[in-house]
Length: 318
Image (cartoon, rainbow, N blue to C red; front, side):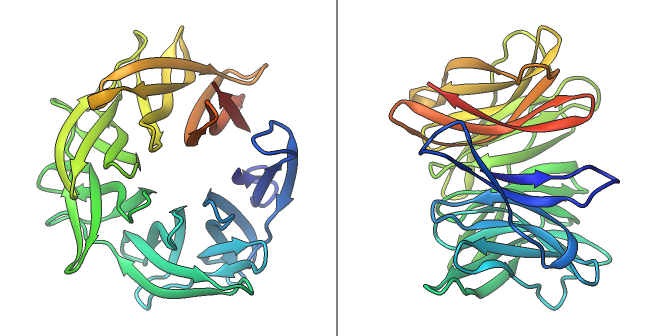
């Protein structure tokens, strides 16, 4: 489990790796992953090889992407000549890292193709800026699956504000697919994608409640979209999805924002919705990501919040 710790405006943020005392345990140790020479660092994702990605400041104060490994420590993934800053948000098991990069004039979704040798040295084979929607501007990457597809949002002046999008690599380069918004809504964002092309996110009207969304895709093209069911209140947001078609996020339940899990059945229909609760003494919670279901248990990570203080939270769901 990886994340960021610190006290805003008082102490620098630091990237951490939390390791359970035993496999799939609920107690463990916290480790500072270091920096790239600056004061701040944050960790965003970890793959099954134990490679961690995130962003850290360099000595000149610029944000750079990094990959951390046990053998090699924190190493800068570097920037393309037209990038001035960048930070990853996800990594898969095949050396693909998705994130967002920027210049003084724009920000774009991007992908690094990397490998880590036996000595822990990181090698970057390619850095790609992903295409925006036609006539669009800024974009952001939010999730990555095991076959290299990326989801996030892209600004679309023709269709309105930010639109959930899917980027797919191919022989001729990257394609971008507009995933759209729910009927009557203004903007949307895609937050996670699994290897089956199921995409989780949310759609927002100009006024009113956000709605958690499941998009279905095939070969990089949209095949369906629907709002996920709620437990009677709104708003609802979906933030992560695994290959067992379990989705995590949050919704309002009894006037509180609670972490939740949707379990999809055959054909993508919702089979169950589960309130995951929150840490004792906290007022709300949000589930951000989840792993595969093993031995009947699913590990979910996110945060619980009280008076501006976020606490990293691990749920073991059976």
